[in-house]
Length: 237
Image (cartoon, rainbow, N blue to C red):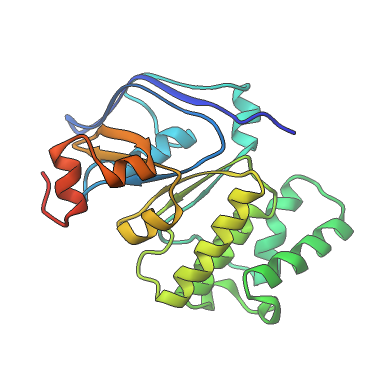
């Protein structure tokens, strides 16, 4: 079994147009948890995810993986808040990551059929992906990310603007992926969702990791007044 990949930031800053939008002195994510990133709008959640994934540049500091960089990049996947659809049908969208890995056609066909069923799109394999509903697009984006069994999966507000049914279906896919060994790091505004899914919670405020710990402990007794206020629905600046 593959050992969990560790991701570390040291003296990490992201500065854009003279404004510091992320400032992390020292932080490490390891293990095989399901980490939920919380914080008000503009707190740096998306920037943190992109930095950890390696697609946003640091202005200062370092990002380190516990494996060589090439291996780390191959082991990760990222699902955006607004899912990016290839201008192809559902079947071709699901097949694309496996084709990049040069998997045999027979294997690709089997996995595409399996994942189409898992995400509820078995009857839509020949439909153009851009014409899917919002919930269908998000499930397709998630299936496309998970079809190659990434070691680490980043998700930025994957259930934003979705109805309850689609949210429930996506949460079920995430639980299944986590149970299968995928490390998940996900941002959300939905405290209910965070309570349902999180093994640990990161609370960001003004670009800094204000609090981090086991979900049960943070939700039961947050250490900082700002975290408590956020959980109570107050405006936090």
